[in-house]
Image: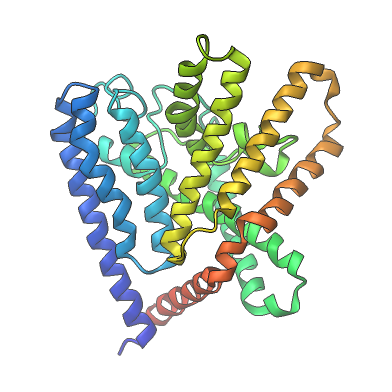
Length: 350
């Protein structure tokens, strides 16, 4: 007989299946109906119910892990891909996938991948690297989880926050890495790195622009940065200031999307700390950008100095503004308990 925890897990899994069936059915509508409409206002109007549905679907889930994955993949990434799709841009556009089949359309829409025909970031030149790193990162994720689960009360608070930073990075890379492997195995789409070794970042520009969560960077560049810059450049502002405003706008949107994702998990009204975290980093990146423009490359510190400073700034500001809303709501404790229950159910039935 199943334990109460396993029965609860099975109920949550059934809810997840129902939500994803709705997602797939809705994306079929996008493929068969919306894609046949001319790009622009008519296609956008046909997709407005989709944007709304994909925004409220995470509210039908209760598990932290299920909410996190669904809201990140669908409410954020898929909605932004569809937003580009309204003007026939991005990974779902006809120019990116001129002969896109329904399975390919659904895959690119649902998963954090892009059509490999047109890459703006380096694709995976050595796929075996992901096969090697993924088990290592999964193991490190498990070790960090066990350390928090068994020894959290004994650890210094700063070490605990450092472990949370590590867990966020590892969980994101493991989930996105598994997604890439599944898509590659089923459809043969070329693999892409979800991140590019962010622990080697030598500046905030390097961290946010070239190393951390490349799919989000790509979407924010095309849905926020480029439109804002093109509108403001020329008649309103010069190229440099238009770029700065576009940069700050991208970080603002990222902060607001994180506030929404945190609300799904915590069901607590936002405190706007997360938005402040991203705005702070946006301003700092803009300052870096200005310093480089003013002083040139000669001002750069040696990586031995700049790397620890960059990582320390990210960790300290995350501890100050990013993690507190999750910690106050107990979302961290819930997620650890859910992982433990999942492992117990899987081991108990094996």
